[in-house]
Length: 138
Image (cartoon, rainbow, N blue to C red; front, top):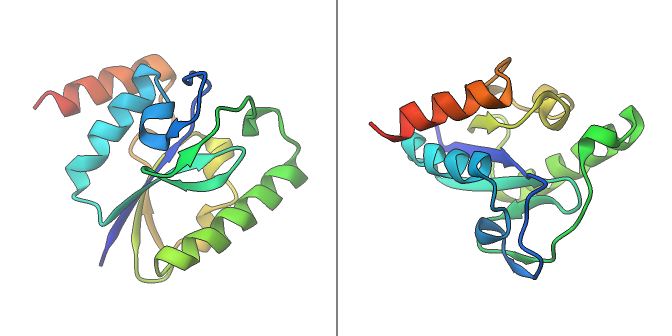
């Protein structure tokens, strides 16, 4: 079973076009990216509120969009777009997904994924950072 890690975008970004892995500059994103490697994933993607599913080496422009301010209808539509994009890269029935994203980013994706885990579920940002720091320093 192949493992795919999905990391949510963050608001803190560079002010210019860059590879997605470099565009997001918050400590939370950086630590999530480092933590993702512990799963020896076949692929790592970013869940972008603007672009949907983004590869780490894909060049994108900075933006100011978040699912946290979207309506339920908009979030459902975004999730359908992401699922369509995911299907281009992996088998949703056979893959295992590690989701490093908040509730609004994963809520409408989970029903499409057969096997998944959400290691940071229920933790506030400060606790997520503590957990990630501990796990990535081993």
